[in-house]
Image (tube, rainbow, N blue to C red; front, side):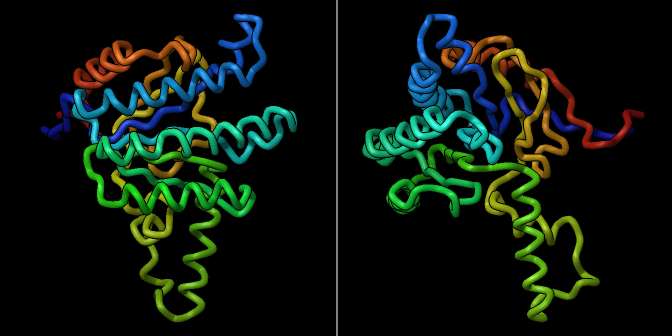
Length: 240
């Protein structure tokens, strides 16, 4: 009989935080109002991770496709990111949260990149929760960038092309220092993965919840995690 793997709590949870705009529109507010509410929700879920036994949390903040939104919304989001990083730095440092950013930084504003670099440095010794923020991130883009880096190593003679396998490529991904997510949650009732952690989530469990992100409370987070504990993860194997 093939053994299955079961954990009471996922070690690594990834979240597609969807529904901020609809949450705001339902209240007669502009979409950015919802993004501000969603940013506050991030703090609550990060704080809930240690009490739930979650060591790694990865959140999808801005995708490579989000640049297609209106200039006003994109500019507002970039300002929100700067404001959030500035206001939350002290709290994150003191609460033991280590912060990392994944995604392509080339298109981001220099001031924002500086804040990202500073926060990564200031929290590099923290280990209570590892918070990874996907900013200007896309799964296909990440694999393409990883492939370019790998090709350069092959061209330089540092990697034998005959030795390249899935494990080799994974070392060039943005998430190379992180375990793969055990559970991916998407809020707002949409049932798609939207180009998020395509490589890493090959064997992740998925949970699609109806709640819009600004309403996703720590109690609902706990319920989703409890549901994960009842699942058997087979990783492609078949029960005997």
